[in-house]
Amino acid sequence: MKMVEYERSLQWVGHLHCPSCRQDNIGWRSSGMSEAFPHFYCSQCSNVFLNRKAQELVYYEATPELLAQIAATLPACPCGGHFTPTAGPKCRWCHHEIPLVRNPVQHLQNPNMVLLDGACLIRDEGEPYQVHIIG
Ligand SMILES: [Zn+2]
Ligand SMILES: [Zn+2]
Image 1 (cartoon, helix red, strand yellow):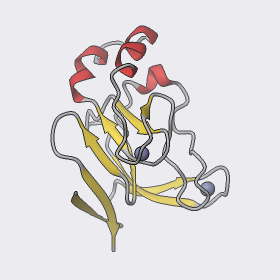
Image 2 (cartoon, protein in one colour):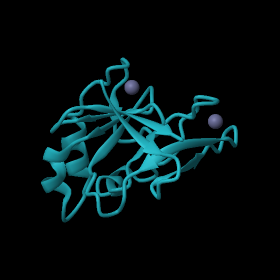
Image 3 (spheres, rainbow, N blue to C red):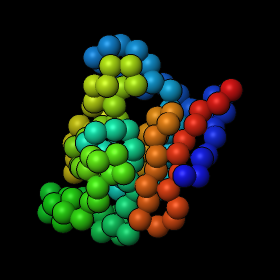
């Protein structure tokens, strides 16, 4: 798989705190201008699915009906898990899910996509890639 490297010093590289073990997970977060929505995390790992084709459905409003409609089309993850509207990234230290998605309907319009170090971005449009934080 293609790899994308981000320098640790970049503005969009930061730490996602795990409320379970209280350690930090380094990762990259897309900006509010990125329009990286809707995106969904895997039930088993920290991979993310970016569903660009569904963006026009939720651009102006997100509803439970639209969530159900989109959720029915989400693919399986290469790890064997499944992309779901309620999953969050997993802590690399204790493997607990980090609760980033508090409201799955509102999350449909959330452009701040978190790709932890080593996670893959799977897209309905474009090649997948794996993120590495370096430096
Ligand atoms: Zn943890
Ligand atoms: Zn997965």
